[in-house]
Each structure stands twice: as C-alpha cells, then as structure tokens.
Image (cartoon, rainbow, N blue to C red; front, side):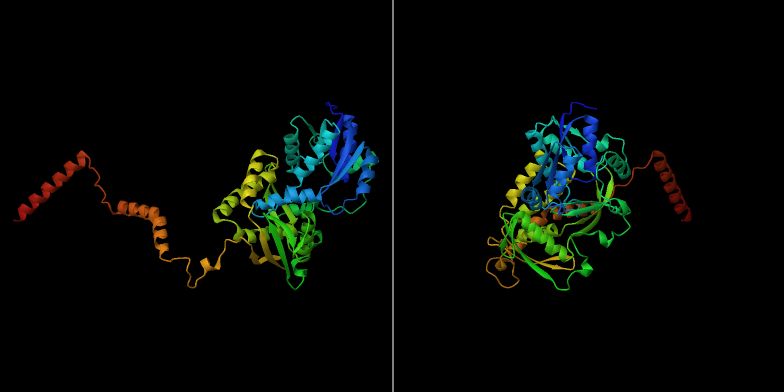
Length: 436
C-alpha cells in the first residue's frame, strides 16, 4: 500500500489512537512519519512526554506548536463576532479548532516536502470532513491517509492489542465510559454512557465547571470591554486573547456557567448527543450582544443575525477556508466594527445575566426613548407612519371583504330541470284556477 507515500505529517496527540496510527503508517506504507502536536489549550499537554513517545514510536521528527493566542485571536473571536451558534445552542468549540490544526499541519507538510498528511478521525464523525476540507483548500494535490477508513481494526480493544504487539506504551488507567476533546474554548463529551439521550450526564464527568447547585451563594460581577467587536479587557485590565478567555473560563466555571447537553445533527447524516462546557464563551457571547444592542444599527444587526445560522453551519461542517465563509466574515467584520463599549455581567449559579451596557458612540438615547415629555419626537408623526405601513394590510382586507360581500351567481340549470320546473309551475296555476 505504498501508494506513492514517502513522507507523511501526522496530527499527533500522544494518545492510543494516534500512537497506533503512527506505527501503522510506518508498517503499512513504509514511509517516514513526522509528528505534529498543537497546543490549543488542552490543559494537560506534556510537551516532553509527547516528544519522547513520538520518537520512541518511530517518528522521524516532532513538531510541537503553541497556537493558543492564534486560536483565540484568529479563529474564536472572528466566529464570536458572527454571533455563531449551531442549532441555537452549540458554540462550536471543537469545530473551530480543526481548521487551525489543519493549517499548521499543512505548513509543516510544505516545509518538510511531505507528500501526505494523516489524522486520527473516524469515518463516522465530523472531524474527518473538517480536517480534509482544510487540507484540500490549502493544497488540492495533497494525499490524505485516514487509517480508520482503511485498516481492519474496529475499536479500542483492537488498538490496544496492536499497541501491545508493537511495544507501544498503553496507559494503565480506568477507561472513561465516554470520549472527550478539550481546547481553550471548551471541552466536549460524547459516546459511551452518553449515547442514551434520556440518561443525565454524571456530575463526575465535568471538568471546567462546578455544578450550579454547588456554585457560590453570592453573585460575581464582571465588566468586559470590547473594541471593534472583540473583547479586550476584564474589569478594566487589558489581556491578550488567550489570557482573557482563560480568565473567563476560570471565573465562569467557578460559578457553574457554560454547561450544555444537546442532540445535534452531524454533517455526515446522523444525530449525535454531545455534552459541552464553554464557560468563557458563554459569557463572551452574552456580553458582546449586550454592547451590540446599543452600538449597532438595527438593520445592520438584523442582517448579521440573519446570516449567523449560515455562518455557524459552515463552521460546523468544516468550510472555514471556503470563499463563502470568507465573504460572510468580511460583512460581519464591517458590521461589528463599531461595537466598542463595556458590558457588565452578573454570574450566579449557572446563570449569565446582563445588568449593564455602555458605549461612547451609543445609539441609545434616553431623550428619544423616554415616556416623559421630550423635544425630539413628535408623537403625532406616528399616525402617518402607521397608516403608510398599514396600507398593504388595508388593501388586502378591502379585497377580502369585497369578495365576501359579492352575491353568488345562481347555478345554471340543465334543460331537463328547466322543463320540469315549467310543468310544475303550470300545474300549480291550474290548481289555483280550479279552486276559483
């Protein structure tokens, strides 16, 4: 199965799957494997351990890149500016990480003159699509090796057996009855015990947040500053994108914020249950919309929101590098360029409540909105405004009323019926004459 593969760059995490894949690539294709690990805020990445394990498993080289700031600045924040929420609930934490990993992987492939790239995504999920659409967008001629679609191994037990056979270290730990994926924006859980959508996720599963029941009994307040649609400060302190998100994760999680349990529609056609923790993202979404409410023109806000569903679907399905997503991004960035201000947020036992918002160029003016006497709005003007906007409704109502009032035409009788009626009428006249 050489297939012209001489050097492949593998998206490598150091876990069971990608460790087995590395050895399988070498054994199956007889190629060099270059391991690439992206630090996007997993929280438990051990750089030295990953490097040593990759080299011991057969990697020719190992690249480990810290992409945390780029991840938040160039991927998470643009997506948040689009107010992107998939199927009304999911903030797309896993989806938005894949194009960045693929981008960095392809940059290494170009640098190393590799003729193939590989990933550990299965043939049933969304990630295979996200990775490979990104690969092809950057190099239409790149060869992609997706082991889960090629090998005969069916599950974890097969992988453990393969690892032991080839001397690949397998951590001796109690297997979690679900799978998880973590980055700086969120952590997701799926599979195993979560496959029954009626069964509540166990409390022991959660990582980034305490349960709302155990959250502090006293509310926490945050003031989040925005410039051109992007968060730049918390409580007056300016922070880098990654540090800001990390702080909000910690504060939000400590107050039970950001949990989500949903059944979503995968791009490959099946429904899947996912449980998510996105404390910082939940806070930022609410805070940004608060500032937008006073800093964005009504029609501009409504136009952006009308496109948010399309944008979120593009991200979920893996079309980050598509021309349509880039075009939408240009519109979004122009629409949110004036979103500069501050939102005051109250966190309490899992709840996120906006309790204040302000902006230097606010479009909200008490003089216009007041119910008291004012000098900027003539209430009589509303009469003409209403009548003009009601014109089409009035016309429709007039047409319907006229149709109901119009007398119905008598149905045309057949010749036989007409003759019978005449005979009946003549008989009635004769009878009348007889009584005379």
